[in-house]
Image (cartoon, rainbow, N blue to C red; front, side, top):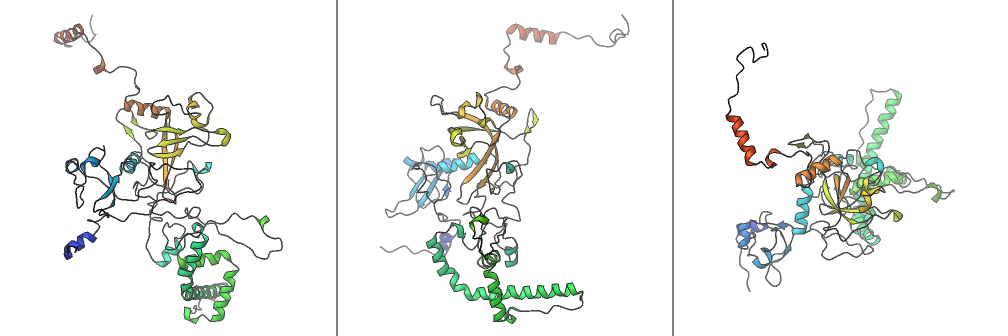
Length: 460
């Protein structure tokens, strides 16, 4: 069967991003050593584009695709969200499925009004809990293009690199990468070293002139081609004995993601060893676990800060943000040093650290000890979302804290579950017919005017 010829304009529209779906991204890696996961569990992040449509077009099966979708499987869902796996399958049908799970997760997260911040190097450190975090949209961090000099200077602040993260590669992947990517660049690396040696020689001569006080003497310009083979060999020999400088040079040439220094103690080295290992502590937040697979915000939030104040229409400016309800999905195990786990806006988070309500031995904290199946919907508690970040595998990491009693009471009043002001409102009072007649009769009675001296209390 011959395919239908497409006009140049039609081919252009088909290839454009406006009329085509983006390619799916790789799914999250599975942990074979971890616990068994459910097939119906929500994935950590979406891999396909989510499509929605209007209610009128939904009743006709119109989702903006080349053919209408069946109404039997698209009208019964509450929220019109689908993910298209394949426009034309081998059976000449559109392969799609519901995307309500991740679509509603995005909506619930955006209701928290949390910005995405840089991931903490040690999330469990108590000293980092109350410190303000940097947004992933800062100008010093959020850039992917620039000159080679700018990329090298901001290596500890970037999140995107052309080269791989060596600590996350297996031995086989590392060997293939060496053969395919590194070995063909030996000649280019030697030229790169010559440029570095030429700059070092010029800097050394300028420093010598400064020490001698000879400021009138100009520094001779040394080009990379002026560097001899002896100088290049001597520079290579020095790099072999300085592992940190060698990694910096190779990382700058291949644009490798930074690595965290190893925790090697001096006791592990031989006492007669002449090799001295020197490491420089990197400031890149992705050196410990690797750079993210997407933008650090993952497209889930575009807010830059949470430093704003909520203004209640009755009670005025609020000290704390509005807390949210969290469901207790796993009880705490103090003997195993396992905190309770909560479900917040579709994400699993740990209970706050330190002297918090979830870590106390009180009657109110007994809900964290066990899950009572008799409670409808599960046991719930109020928490205050503090920050959110995206780890190297693309998973959202939430941090929550204890919610204040006043903020919880105001939030419950908004939902109709509590009442802050105990006095009943006038519109809620029940009035009898006699009360209404008495009020209107008092209004029709003429009031005395204050026109005499007796009215002002000057004369009795």
